[in-house]
Length: 167
Image 1 (tube, helix red, strand yellow):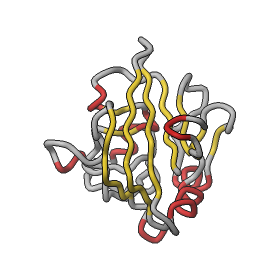
Image 2 (cartoon, helix red, strand yellow):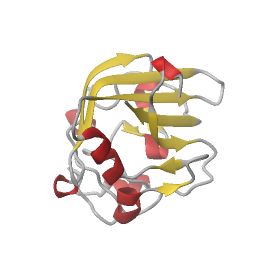
Image 3 (cartoon, helix red, strand yellow):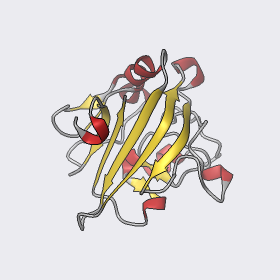
Image 4 (cartoon, one colour):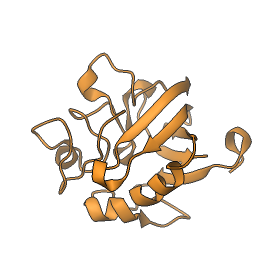
């Protein structure tokens, strides 16, 4: 990928919603979809890619109008499965807003949250956000971000395409 200097590994892509992202823990752990289309690489693979070095995260968003935005985090990691692949990000820059860590409501922040799916509820809410949202994510008390469901409220637009990538 030549975006932002190249060298990125894409680990999530959503566009036409041809791949069902309403999946349980095991699928989110191991990955699903088609690497040439929509996919989730898998939490275990992302953990292994981030565990030994400082890793950057880039999120690219596109609205149906063609408007684009991005968020870059200079530090990105997820913990191992024993900690439910807890998200760690810092050092935001970009045009899409910081929907992972910057919110007026601390319950909505995804940063430092454990990954949760409808069949493995690790969020801070008694309501099971993954079940209500229909996709796995780093839910707090639900969230203003959730790219597996094309949500990034700080972008201020409907999202048509998303990519999450690391290097």
